[in-house]
Image (cartoon, rainbow over all chains, first blue to last red; front, side):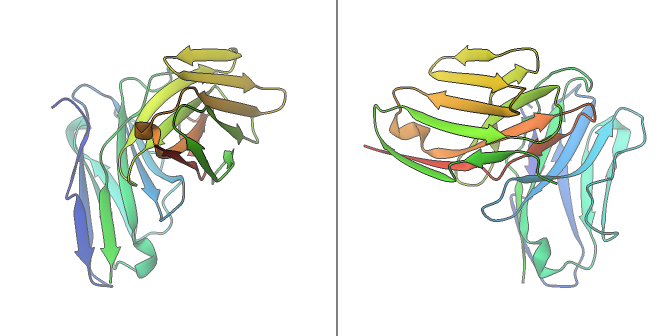
Length: 115
Length: 110
């Protein structure tokens, strides 16, 4: 595909349920990022994958959040036992090569609503 | 944590006028980037300025960077209704992560 894609575009869930959000980066991009944007706020960094290196998880807000990247391509962000404060838009971005001043290309995001 | 802070939080201008917004940050950076976001969804990359650059142009956009003051400005000239959006600055340091500000909401009135 031409850009970063994310699915689903919208997700409504009940408090306490688990959710999985998917990101398909641009083909060939080695770096992948997850961000979260709460209403009216800027983006908050969550996690960063670069090639086969261990991911940088320093932005994950709690141990209910986890992410994996299979085969160096598709990534899944999992939120367990969702809480209402998890409601936000979750954005994924990919980048050709980390360590260079390359642009991060963002997907359209997944809007998560926890009731 | 958010490093960048945009000013003003909101801006309303008439079509054809220029829009200027500012961004301040706290720590040393490799580069600073500006993004546009429409309707609270995907971000569009506008321009990247490296720490050793002072000014950059792209179409109707002009970005300045003053590393001594840890600040940047984005100027949109001859604004159009389609420029209505939220604008974010984001800084990148050696950790290769972007740190975003809360954004400036720009409304261009026809």
